[in-house]
Image (cartoon, helix red, strand yellow):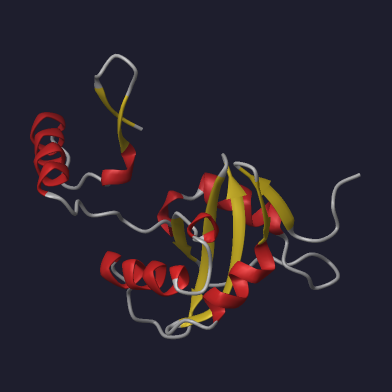
Length: 151
């Protein structure tokens, strides 16, 4: 039987997801949040308090603010924006359904613009050679053979 609370262990650290959610909910523009663990990464699902779009600079400022209150290993690496959270029959947030929705629906993820000059150059190369208008920088990775790939 699994744990009934939201405590997880990632890379040797015991993490209480509710603690992260509390700090996220205190941030400007955040109405409500749920933190999930996917592939050993913390992912925040956020309902915004306003309908304004959030850009990567706003997410960076959230991460900086969270690092002021939480250890670095407790700051979510990915942020997704949703309109509402799925609920169980007894009215609690259905984390399993939310996680599966994120995997199925790539439209709820934020777009990660290239930040450094190197990231910009790499994304321009991919755009040119693949004929794609935009490349999400988080979907480009370097494999063991030193070859870049698009995830």
